[in-house]
Image (cartoon, rainbow, N blue to C red; front, side, top):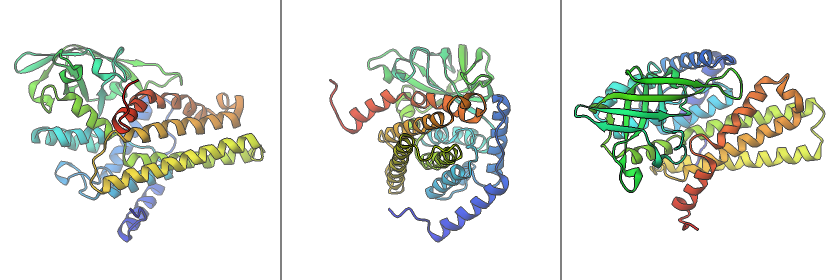
Length: 375
């Protein structure tokens, strides 16, 4: 597929680039609560300007444009160094595919506009990447389910209005067949949220969430009871996609910053550093080509599948590779005088854990893409 802009796409890109140059926010506050508020404000500003939900149906708050507008949006966000709004598209996609008409009209406009915030209740203390072993239970009590259990590493749970929650509705074999998705109002009695302090100090991006006999009305089940594993797998495949090219653009900009840092410190002729930069440049190019292949498949009507784990592995390892070079260039100054680089370096350590560890991603590729047998 020719990924060069058509005349209409070129006009769209130019208009978006000019708008971002005039409108993008400055550096986000260090405090996570203030940073989240700034991101929500940015999301709403993007939505009001018509840049959110570009390829989504208009009846649910979208713009009704084609898929490539989403790709261009992510490219330009990354190139401009503008923040992405809080993630919404993969949960919205699950609602669009599996939701009833009532659920779509109730939840999608608020989610796309940023008026209502969501978190994703997947991981548990003993069921992180192995979601099939989750223990949070949902008991059918007629007109509602009573949910009890614990989630952990739940991003932005302290700010969320709703939770896209996985819970066990049956103990069966295989275990993933007894999982159901619930759309949970986070203001419901019986929910306790405890922020988790991160290695970066004052940030509280993640939280533990406890559910104590929380009543969830039966109409707030997404899809069929017991269909949660299928919905979760679909949701996670849609986490990848246009965002990959945006991350590539962002990492490319960081690479340019690294080269500038090396030159400023007289290290740009150091052979070992040049080799490190060259390896990172190769990794970036591989990520670019892989993202282009995935976009081509989407444009050809191929739905996302387990191949998305390739991009997940490439993005996580490339980000860590680039930030390791920053530590090599800056040395001890990174933790003293270069706070932005230091925070990025620390946050990147989680890139090979969240969304499924790198080991899980490799297992997915081995079994579901390469069709290798278990040893």
